[in-house]
Each structure stands twice: as C-alpha cells, then as structure tokens.
Length: 142
Image 1 (cartoon, rainbow, N blue to C red):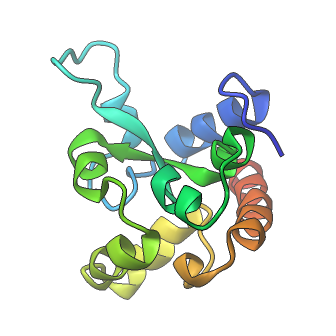
Image 2 (image 1 turned 180 degrees about the vertical axis):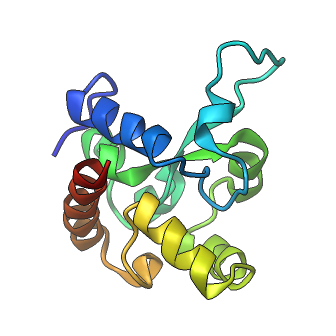
C-alpha cells in the first residue's frame, strides 16, 4: 500500500495499461494516445482521478492524505471527465457512466482499471485491498 506517485508499482501498472491498449476510464480514447509526447495541448490530456474523491472521503471521516492518495484510489481519466466527476461520491457518478457501457465494454474496462463489480458500493478500505490485487493481475497480464 503506497501513496508514492513515483512508485515502481504505479509505473508498472501504467505501462501495462499502455501495453494492453487500454482506454482511459469511461472513455473510448486509448491511454497511449493521451500520453503521446508528440501531441501537445493547452491542458494535460490524461489526469489521475480519485475514484473515491477526497472531499467524499473527508466527509466520511477519512482525512489522512496518505490514505486518500493511495495508488489504488487513482485511475487515468481524460481531463474533461475528471472535471465533470469533480467531488461527487462514486455512488453518484459511476452508475450513469456504467449504464452507458455495453456488457462487453464494461468487462474490458473493469479489467483494465482493476475495478471489482459494484466497487462504488464497497467500503473504502475493502475496495483498496481488492483493487491492489486486481492491479497486480493487470500487470501480470501485460
């Protein structure tokens, strides 16, 4: 369990997503195209999104940044999606995004992003444990 943004495990996971040709969370756009150094924009195309946003966790009594900023609490999203999601709890922002996906796309997305079924309903600590295990499986698959 780490919150280090320079963690080797985070680099391995991100590299795995690129190797597996994964899309950003709730996006049809490939992560590889969003991190291409040849493509320049006025804003960083890919952002790290708190799956359980900081404001939501603080409201539930989790205030330690080390717990909030766990690598397992982040997913790569396009910046417009990150802005739309904002501080909403996952129980508010995930169901509509999830419902828009076909079963096949959802299965693929959940594998790439190491998300358990109905993850937004899980207690935060249990979610982190489960997601870490799934992130390791993504690395192994790559």
